[in-house]
Length: 152
Image (cartoon, rainbow, N blue to C red; front, top):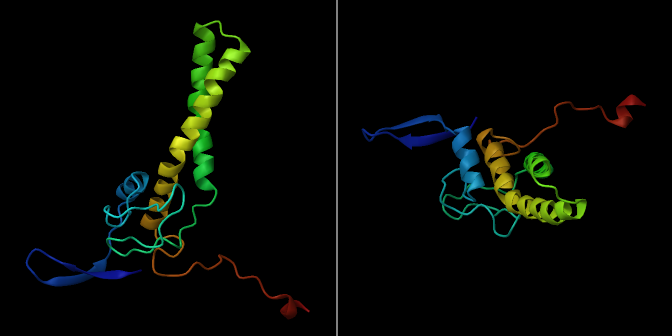
């Protein structure tokens, strides 16, 4: 657990664990802001996070937001597009081609639009839960398997 020096209102300092509220960290990440300070930018390009925050210096290079953001985007977009398709199909007599002309672009545009905020939210989640190096310790496997030489 990483301890920080925090100044109180009376002017005396105390050592205590750094607070990392989960909701605030996810919200800051979704707004393309550093989950630690909320001021610095989280992404230097569309989906490439910065190595460290330019304002507070918090390192972002050890995040592991690999496959979770696309899975979440697929789930979110799939639910909205399917509900929209079903509602439209019940109300209007569109042909298959008309549905394709409407819902394929909606699906693609909304998936692209949601990818960066969702990835930022996942990075904020990992920061708040001190996962993957954000807690000041390196990741270690949950189980250490013996080497092959030890078994022979």
